[in-house]
Length: 245
Ligand code: SAM
Image 1 (cartoon, rainbow, N blue to C red):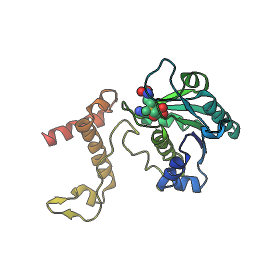
Image 2 (image 1 turned 90 degrees about the vertical axis):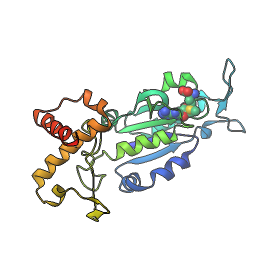
Image 3 (image 1 turned 120 degrees about the vertical axis):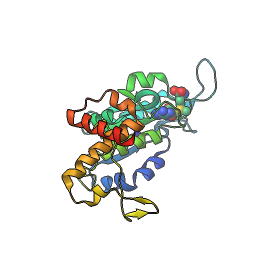
């Protein structure tokens, strides 16, 4: 998988992506990451990337040409057609389904805006999609691009130490993850559930599924509205409900 990020702050992307799961995936060449600074595609002495908005109003707008030329350079560096995504509070909400689908694209060019955003003609002419990290505004698209890079990278084969560990994460199957415990067995009056110490892996699997269903019902009941549960899962959820009531 190849990520290209168009950003006025390239060091922010390369530094943050060099840690942990993404850092290891880059080192092992499972993913590659390149950054493109629109400032390198200017030809005035001040390397101007922004200008005042037509119609007046506060703030500055990122100019079309440096963004377009940076994207063109990124596209030329890609060996296959890439999908160009503008990170924007007006975009499709990023969720696990959107990211899982994005894994099928082998080259993503992510555009991080700044200021009041980018010239609208750049969005309509140069971008294939707009993605949002949520219904709030952050100061630049870099953090959003890093979220996308991280969340996709952990889904790629060979990236996480234990195959399948991404599959059990929250949202992968429309449910929240089950609770996790590690040593010590006892913390003040709180102990690890007996079932997890039993060594009975079949029973542990059933208990974990019950917890996933129950926690989703408790914390994010909206997720269960669109989820089709099997008869066995319905039964486990009923058991969970009667145990907490
Ligand atoms: N005026 C823009 C609006 O209200 O739609 C917001 C501009 S914001 C201050 C600057 C940049 O941050 C945007 O161009 C975008 O790249 C990024 N950004 C802000 N909020 C975001 C969000 N929720 N998801 C993804 N990117 C976001």
